[in-house]
Length: 260
Image (cartoon, rainbow, N blue to C red; front, side):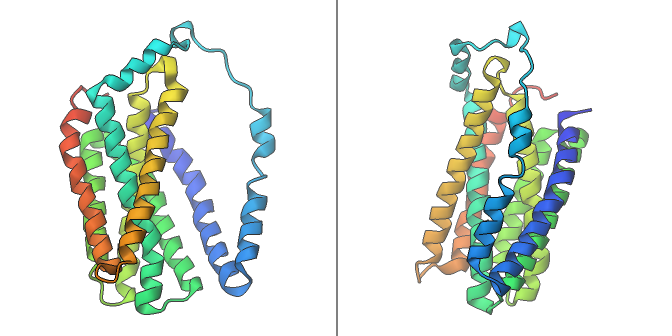
């Protein structure tokens, strides 16, 4: 079974639970209180604790023994380009995602319950995008899959910026979730593909840390722009999605070597 196909199973199991939880959280915030939301989230974080404590690490192959010299892999232009692409991908996705519900609430007066439904539709898109991402990698390769995810993200965010009513947001939010799920699956597959085995955990965690930094920058950038009266949510969407195009010149470097 390929790595991408294995990830399909993970997404298929995890995302429906997540989408259902988002719907419940939206209802709690609307009908009970935000305090109830935070208490529920806190309690849920304790559920996996016994499983984590019971895990035992397998012995490593001698060829995968940790070596400091392996960190020289980060000097490779391909690795730098991949890290930069991940930063940009998640900056765009996170920045856009945080603005969707406030945009709909501010411009169209939707309720918290409806906002939860929008997030659930987005989550369904993410589920299908995760599965689609794995299938795309297996069928058409990593570069084409990444380009498709980027184009879907770019177009869906651009269209979101010009919708005249909240009804138009339903399919757009779904497509945006689809691109997000595909993005994550494709990028994580790439990150694992290029990970140096001698520093596998460290290298992969650095890739993930950079995507988290990208998300933080996306939150600040998109949120900050939306709060500027001359910009607002609509132009914030337009500006943030343009960063998708900034990632395109990185593709020749990321995919310069033959892919499996």
